[in-house]
Length: 286
Image 1 (tube, rainbow, N blue to C red):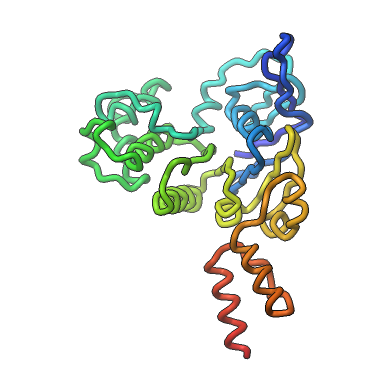
Image 2 (cartoon, helix red, strand yellow; image 1 turned 60 degrees about the vertical axis):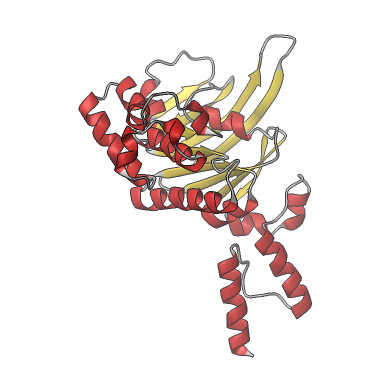
């Protein structure tokens, strides 16, 4: 399911003395089945854009095409429930939204609320739990007896049980240790590849954007600053620096290595593994 934003503008507290422009003239595409990262500093408009993707917010100007639906400014929209089922959002610290007495009930809550039978919801809960890498016996436990990482996986399973076509991830690894961050991001990457999901990652991590995304949208002061592939975005360090961002650590190390070497490598390496292979290739040639 493609999503297209066209000249979208949104103001918080519009029409009041507290009115604040959050985003303006925002236009970009999220292709079906792809992995898009939205990067930018706090206050750049990333989270406001995110909330438009399943119509938690509606544009005050412009329009958003979500599959076959068009959400246009100034028009009353009906039957938004189906959009919100098809576009699932994993917010920061989703484990804080757990509330049921068992994991199974928590995962089933969303599907049942959208009209799925209890029996089917329980089947979806088992499937979703397996997708996030937790054993089935966890279903009968209280979510509050689990570790923080397990609680987050349960919260993600609750979103997956809705069987969304698009998975929007808002800083999904916030607060996790390095191993937990890596495992969580690898889990989302596997889901995107194996299930053909469209993934949208909102992140401060240039490393995650470089490793997982095939398309990047840079936000700055409420506008789209630049879009491109990870190679296109991260090959221009000064452009990133101009808006207070930086290249991934791997790219920074590659530039230092090239400076010592006296010549550039064959291509831009976006992950440590890729850089290691390139350096190993050079050694084999010498």
